Length: 512
Image (cartoon, rainbow, N blue to C red; front, side, top):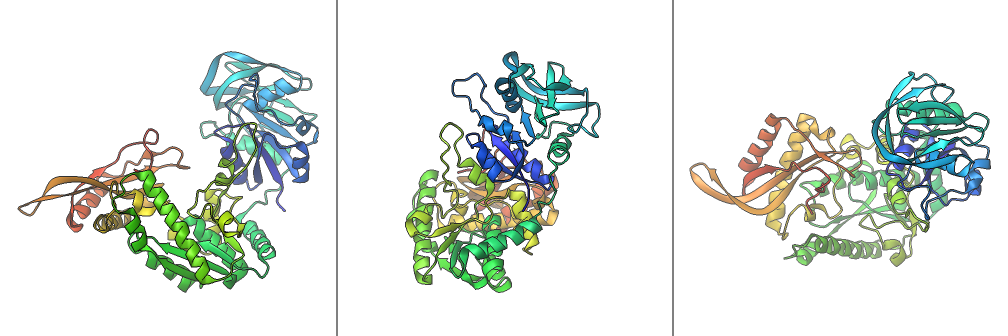
């Protein structure tokens, strides 16, 4: 079993980044709520602890504080930003409010490399984001690095293997930050670098078999990365005991249904049932223009169709979902209420309680990049493993305004041209998302010598790491010209193509 580095979350926007950096070093990490009792870490075989940053001040009345027992477990502890302030506050030093918030780049001068800074240059550019700082070290600690505004930017207690950093080593802005984290988890904690997707697949297959036994599993297959990898992994474990249901809601992209059936039914020989409910979805969406109403109608109808499919299949014991680790983390409220509920981020959210099925989430420990690696390990084709995100409501939220069969067909044809050009140019694999949007606006154009009063298509191409923020992609002008020319010439009913150059924030990635 892989050794675990615990990341205790105090509400930092970078907590997931810390966990990812650890896993990039082939060491398993797990994020814990700050209220987790120290005994749990011992039970989980934790060999090192990282205290995350956070937006709170240690002086606040409701400041998130860990179980002090973590400091007596005998394992190394690294405090980052808020974490180093906790050292000062809880271990006999002094943390004080800074005269001004330190935010942005700084220069760290390393006084003594030790194990934390082994192999690193004497000066590093680092990223700061803090309002409080340690002004008196706790007993046993000494300074090993300074910045322009802090004599205690990096500290250590060599006897207890406690380390503190006032800056954020996990972010891209910090020079050699990944090496600092690796020095801690491998050099200080002594972790074996044995966390790999090959080992994960073997362990997950064994766990699925043990859990399911002779039972049957049902999974809502969308064709996206998460559900596809979950289906392939479960199928490898239990074969024909898995049944997948693909709901054709009439809001799919061009050729999507045929591609899913061909891949999973013919290639992987998975028991795949297709529920053709396009007419039902479109009938219920007729005349609906409010985006939130659209989503609710699509979600409720999906559940209804999925439930009906289960009755036609017969008996099932388990419901499988492609829940990922960020979904689990985000469902836990940061605050003094540690209640954890899985949010209904998938179309099948809410089904377990209604249908009395036990839940299987084989990917719930993984980040998106790890899921893609598992997919490759299982032999899924590149176009599935590296498929761009597609919203649950499908084209229903890419047709702005009322949804009609004609508008959907125009959007499908335009989007197919965009995807074809993006793939052929190689840009498809470089961006986070690329898609077309049908705009309920007519514009005058010219076809031949005739006036053409027709619809407008918006093109949206964005770069992102996690969809939390995004920037529009600067595609080559020649590619944009080719996309626009093909859409206006080949898609009847379109007179104009516009490019969305909005970033997130303030805009969202999807239009609705």
